[in-house]
Structure formats: C-alpha cells, structure tokens
Image (tube, rainbow, N blue to C red; front, top):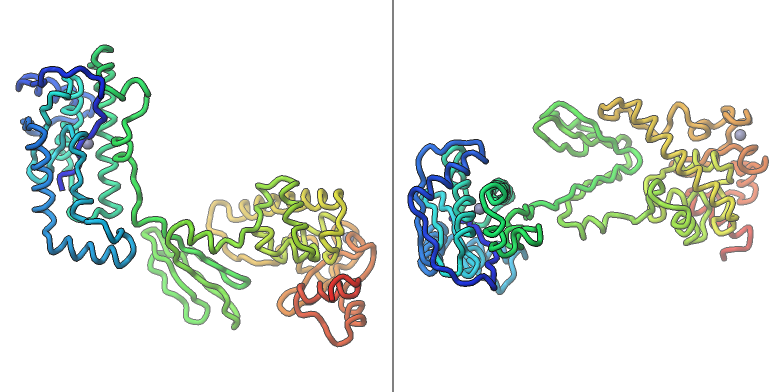
Length: 453
Ligand SMILES: [Zn+2]
Ligand SMILES: [Zn+2]
C-alpha cells in the first residue's frame, strides 16, 4: 500500500493562486532543512513527482489494486464479515483504497520509492512546501530505516508503525512551519496555526486505533487460586496447575490447590464484554461516605455478608471483612439497615483504614517483587484466623461462626457486647439445622427477629 499520504484541510477561503512550483534547488533546500530538524542525512537525493490531482488519485487506486489482488481481497472480506468485523455492505477494496480526493496533497510510495506532491490551483505555496517537508521525512526514514507498509488489512503492528511514522513526519512539519515560514505564510495554512490543533484527518492518522487489541484476560482466583511469576517457559504443574501465560520476560503461572476447582480464566473481547465480568461492587478506597452508605444499605443483609458481596463492594473477602468489622467494633450479624448513621461512618472509616493498611503492608512485604505466599491468614491480623487467641485490643479470646468453607471471626467484647454468636448459642437456637453459609445464617437470624418468612 502506498499510504502515508498527507491529507490536510484546504482552506475554503484561500484565494486561488497560481499553481505553485518548485525548482530542483527549492527541493534541495527544503530537504536540507528536513535533515537538520530530523537529525538524519539522506543517502540519495529525492526527486518528487508533481502530479495533477486526477493523475495522483489514479496512481493511488492503481497501486492499491495491484498490491492486494482481487481474489485475496474477496477472501479476506468474507472472513472479516463472517467474524462480524466488517459490515455486510462494505466493500473492502473501496474501504482500503479510499482516498479523499479533495484532501489528498501528497504521499510517499515506499514500494516504488516515489514521492508524489499534487499540483492543484487550490494549493498555496506554503502548504505545498509543508507537504513536501512532511513527505520528505517519510522518504528520509525509508532510506535510513526502511519503512515497511504492509499489504492488505492492516494489523496492530502495521497501524502502530504507521502512527509512529506519521507522528515523526508531522512533528517535523510543525517544527518546519515554526522555523521557516513567515507569519503571513503560516496564516495561509487554513487550519494549522489558528486553532492550535491539527486538522482532523491528520489527527486520525496519528491515532493508533489498536484494532486487534481490547482483548482482556479475566482471572477469577476464587478462594484457592494463586498466581506465581516463574522463569520464561515454566511448565504447568500436574495437579494444581490451571494455566500459564508466557511472556518474553517470564511466565505467569496460575494454580489452584484443593479438590474443589472453581478458579476460571476467561478471554473477552472489548470493554462491553469485560464489563459483564465486573460484579459492580464499589471500590471502597475510591468512594465517599454517601456512596458507601448507599451500597451498604441497598439490600438488607448482615453487615458481614454485605461487605463481602462483590456486587456491593469490590475486593473485600472473608478475611478483610472480619478485620474491618473488628476495627469498627461492629457485630458481623448486625443487619445493614439497622445500622445508625454513626455506625455506618465508623464502618466506612474502618474499611478504608484496614484496606489501606494491608495494601501498604503487603506492598512492603513484596518489596517490589511478585507477591508469593498469598494467604487469607496473615500474621498481624486482629481476629481473622485467630480463633481462641487473644484479641489484640482487649485480650478476650476470639470467637467464630463456622460456615461450610470458611469462618467468621470476631471479638465478643469489642464487637457484640459480650454476646456469643458462636456455635453453642446459635446451634441451640437452630437445633441441628446449622447454617452452612452466611446467607443461610442470616436468614435464620432474620427469622428469629421476625424479619423474613
Ligand atoms: Zn505522512
Ligand atoms: Zn476485643
């Protein structure tokens, strides 16, 4: 493809002038200035081809057709349409070879090593000079580094390369206008100086749209899933290995201990698809008290369950839920809608302090390395995982409520006014019907209070 065309908005009001023309000496002078700004020397002199608009447009069409044979293009087009990446009505050949005839000012053909500038009565001399400077940058970089514009449907690497090449050429061009064009000349350039912004066509060229990108790997570690950073090419261990992502610098290994397999990896395309994996919980460290309070009381739950519900709050698991409640001196089974304004504010402060504290601690522990030995039971936790051990605040033995797969730990003195919510009290109440989950337990609690049926 010839691409790398410079397209600028031409001024509608610019008075028609005589077709600007450049002698070989003019071109040499412009090329020399480009060398100075770009900091590179041409290996050979470039002789631009000055074509009329129709000839130039015909050139672009002819080249794009010959570089992308009909049969190949049709096959690509069908494939893209099947994948839903191309609209059924769109003709790929037209879409790729589309030249805005009115906007085209010049281009550099890296296959034929030909620089083409358009002579047109509507193009003023300073605009033509800038076009030449811009395309000369492409020619210069092609001589020194080799431009490799690709054929067919551009992929991300082709688009990134094009954006890089256009970025440099445009920066040199703007610098050129600054240094060598007079104010009067600059003002003749319709959109460049006045708005301080580049013309929309040029801005589009400079953007790297990232067509193949926007694919996301969503990893659900659940309870027993862990990530490890290993040397590149590390093998996936038999029993606990789930997946490995290979990068040039190393391998991200995902494992899941235990027999219950719940961890999952999803590959999703696009932000909309990514959002479907987001349970939507509030980021407590980014939220204010109002938003926290609204999320907390959106549904009537025990406060422990509300805190650990990923639809309500993001990133608070069982362990941090216990720690937050201990710091807030609140009972884990208190119902959220029965919390006073003061209690909600206390809980909010405790949640922020606990999360910030642990983020800080774990970062220091990892010391810039990859966090290994991830566990829900941490040295330094006040109540979580410390059943029977003394509460760091009051010394009373930490109590627990056992669920099927984990437990809630709390200090009766600090949090429940001395009442035990633990095994004995609840089991007597519930007879043999011991709750397996917090959800179940919360229904029992509500039933006892006459809340739920
Ligand atoms: Zn360009
Ligand atoms: Zn205590």
